[in-house]
Every structure is written in structure tokens, then in C-alpha cells.
Length: 479
Ligand code: ATP
Ligand code: MG
Ligand code: MG
Ligand code: MG
Image 1 (tube, helix red, strand yellow):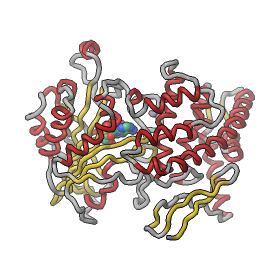
Image 2 (cartoon, helix red, strand yellow; image 1 turned 135 degrees about the horizontal axis):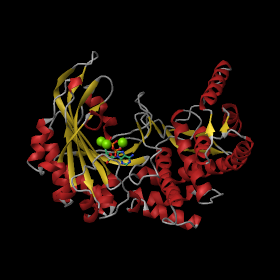
Image 3 (cartoon, helix red, strand yellow; image 1 turned 45 degrees about the vertical axis):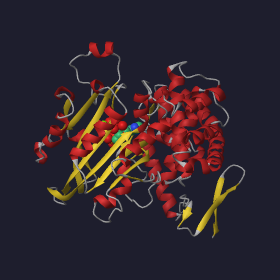
Image 4 (cartoon, helix red, strand yellow; image 1 turned 180 degrees about the vertical axis):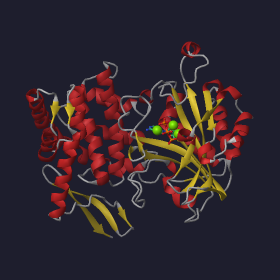
């Protein structure tokens, strides 16, 4: 089943259960000082869970663009190396704000997977919260009973606080969770590990697909818990993982979410997916990262040197560097993938279509300037390695690369570790702190890089001022 249909089917299923389909929130959440990027479907609904505002509908469903590259959820290092964690991914979910609770959430999730999508029950596992004595939390026997009516008991596993208890923060709404995992290994492989639990063990074909959170408590400032007067449901399913299951693949990258992008990478670089592990990782990194960067730009977050913009710049640079090193891509090419992406995702997310030209321009300029930096920096780093008898690069030298040549420190440490060298990271941080103090003293203000695409309907975004090497300014036209 094509991803486009699958997404629709999910939303329509919950619509048939009286849910209102709502838009994805932007990938960059400006209103939330605790969060740089949207990392879960529930982010935009936080005020409802906190009781700070009233939802217009008590049941909603959507597909939310998420980015997990910072803070509590940072999957960046996994991306490309494994086949099921992305930086940007879609989380499809359903919510109840003080309306239905565990029974319906569990039954509908099961109905959707096993009756609508007809996923074989024997390949599904569910987990429930086992309780936590130290925190005086009970085992979630309610969820257990609801699952027992649907699933064989040997497929219901107990999970600890880390995997099966969700909290928004030190205080506030929280509650136990039930996860649904899928085992898509061959029968032969399954037989070989009979009786062994592979759920939550980082096996690429035994993966979590859906998390159902039952928000039933409020944690008070003193750490104690009280029952919430009205309870909520917050669920999230990894859309690309669901596509993998439904398209009979063993990797998210083999689904139609990624294959058109991968084909384009192959045709531009003349390197092929499946050629070698190094090339495969590089292709996965680029296919993944272009989505993160393009969606962030389309939502108004430009690459820059500060805050969220810097995170986006680093993601793009990671992709450029993988292309440079492993695909021999010495000229800008990632920007060309935006057209494929916008064709692929434009129906569900029109912003990627309407902002495609902007995304391409920004990405191309970033690529060009970073490729220059890379050539220079890699040469310098090579020399440093040759000169170092102790196989350790000093923090001062790494800082010089960073400061003068714009060579990112994570890149420096990645290259060094690949070549068996060490980096004096502490010394680097000292240098960084000194520089920060210098700039603070000079009262240098960091330029604001957030771009309001729609500024309270008062102005309309009309594009960028392009200078030779850099995108500099954003213009608004008052309307
Ligand atoms: P995992 O244990 O696989 O890292 P998680 O427990 O961190 O997942 P949740 O926070 O429960 O994930 O998010 C809900 C769902 O979103 C998961 O069940 C999974 O299907 C999907 N998901 C989470 N992280 C990613 C990611 N980095 N890329 C793609 N899908 C993801
Ligand atoms: Mg995770
Ligand atoms: Mg998990
Ligand atoms: Mg989870």
C-alpha cells in the first residue's frame, strides 16, 4: 500500500471514530520555550493537557512532522546507521482530551492494525507498565485487562518506567503507556530465537511502532502524584515504520517514502544503494537529512549560527559531509532532492511544495559554502593528524578550525574517531567559553534567524535577498 493511502487511511479511521482531523503544527514550535523543535504529536496540545485552554474538539487526529535532534529525544547519531530512526519523521496519532480513555484507545489501535490493515496478530507484541515501587506507581492492570481481551497473554510484556511511563517534565500531567511492537523477521529467524524477548532490544526488525499514553496523573511540585480529574489519551505511531510493515520491507528506507529520494541520489552521484555499508549509510543520511532540513526551512527555520538555526545547519552539514566523503560529491547536489520530496509529500504537507524554490535556494547556498569549508578544513585536519605523534588533537587547534574555518566540532571529532585519533574536548570547550565571553563583552548580538512566513496576517513573506554566497535577509511586504 502506498504511503499516501496509508496516511489517509489512518486519519479516516479515526475520523470514523468521531475525531477531527487537524493540521500538523510547524516543526519549529515558537511558543514553547522548553522545546526547540516539535518532537511528538502531543506538543501542540500541551495547553489542553495542562488545562490552560479548551480544545474545540475533544477528539483529534493528525500526522505530525517531528524532529528528534536535540534535548530529551536526540536520535541524530542513530540516523543512517540504523534503518528505523529518522531525524524528521511523521508521527500519526489520535488524542482524547478528557473524553475516551484506555479501553477505546487500546481497542481502536488494535482494530486499525489488525482489522483495517490486517497485520498478522502473531507478529505483534504489546507492553504495559509494570509499576515502580520507589515512585509508588502501580502496575497498569487496567491496560493489561483490556489487552488480554484482544491479545494472547504471552504477547503482553511488562515494561519499566523508562519505556512505559510518560512525563511531560518534573511536574504536570503524566501516566503509564502501552507500546505496540512489530516483529517482521522471517519465520526461520523467529524459530532461532524462540522464547527470547527481542522487544526494546534495538533489533532492526523488532521495532516499536505505536505508543499509547494514558495521561491519568498530575505530578505535584513536591513529587507526589494525584489523579487527574479528567484523563487524556495521547498516542503516536511512527508513520515510516508503519509503511515498512505494510510494504513488506525490512527497512524504512526501502519504502516509497524514501525510494524516490534514494533513486535521485543514485542518479546524481552515480553511487548505488547496496554497493557497500559506507555508501548505504551515506545515502540513508542524506535521504533522511534533506527531509529534516527542507521541512524546517519550509516552516520558517533557516540554517544559521545560533539556536534552532544552528541545529538545522549542522544536520545539513552532516549530510553534505557524508556525500563529500563517501559519495564523492564535490559539488552541491542535495538541493536537487527537494523537487522529489515536494512531489512525494506535497499532498499531505502543501508547505513543502509552496516553499520548494526557497528550500532549494537556501540548501544550495549552504552546500556551496560548506563544501568550500570542507575542502580547506579537511586538508588542515589531515596536516594536524600527520603532525601529531600522540594521536591527540589539541582543543586549541580544533577551536581554530571551528572558529576561523567554520569547521563544526562534531565533524572534527567524527573524523578523528574514524581515523583513530583523540580530541581534547575539554580544552576545546574552554576555548569556546572564552570566545563566548569575548563576544558577550563586545555586546555582539546574534542575529535573529527566525522567519515568520505568516506574521499574524499582517505581512506576507515575499522571499530572500540573495547575495553572492549567502542568503542574507528576509523581506516582508505589509499587506
Ligand atoms: P524508539 O524506542 O524506537 O526510539 P520511542 O519510544 O523513542 O521510539 P515514542 O516517543 O514513543 O518513541 O514515539 C512514538 C512513536 O514514534 C514510536 O513508537 C515510533 O514508532 C516513532 N518514532 C520515535 N522516534 C522515531 C524516530 N527517530 N524516527 C522514526 N520514528 C520514530
Ligand atoms: Mg527513542
Ligand atoms: Mg521506545
Ligand atoms: Mg515509546
